[in-house]
Length: 254
Ligand code: XBP
Ligand code: MG
Image 1 (cartoon, rainbow, N blue to C red):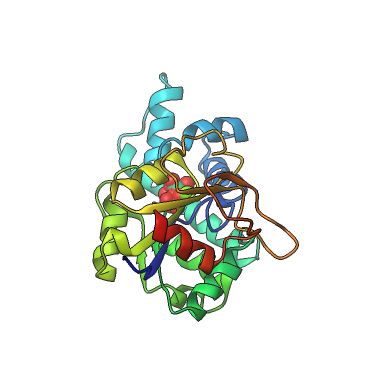
Image 2: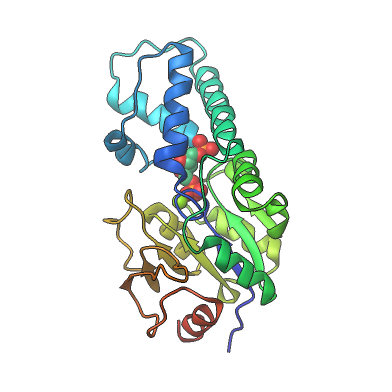
């Protein structure tokens, strides 16, 4: 029987609600500073989230929504500049404690460490954004809780391609039958399942209608004492929180 050795976490939307109240706001500020009249409201952003990666998302926006936009000569450089500034503004928001972790995230990470499970990250966002979130919203040494951090452009193909999860597994020296993935979106689960990983999903407002039929467990959040999670797919056998013992049970039967 396979033994659970590691947990691999997505970041945006899974560890924290960083999209609507973080990246989106920072994108808008960067646009304003650059003098472009682009405003991504919550509804538009839901659509734009189908494209993973901030630079890719800006390019998709221009291609799809602004057919008459006159691109500057160095359009790639312009997009890269906007994205860099967006990330600086996003980091500032994290530094001021602007974005808390989702319910149950800290609890589960602490439990995992106490149980000797290895921790990793597999995300589309940049390594700097991951470090800022972990060190400001988790703990001052939050980054060091994770043995492997797979982020951003480290692989050529972003989610929904499986590359970032395959990269994280390779770094851990594990096969897909030795780890669990945590995701919040359809692009995310396509990536984790593409790498062969059994996947737990915590939905959020942007992703509740996504297709999660490939998930072994779908919950609204991981649960805290006094804040039970709601099971939307799969079984927690009466448990009110996603705990390490519940995960081990799910893993055994997956
Ligand atoms: C989510 C993404 C990212 C963020 C923005 O990644 O698609 O692009 O929206 O981050 P995940 P960047 O859920 O895999 O963490 O601008 O740095 O790409
Ligand atoms: Mg995500």
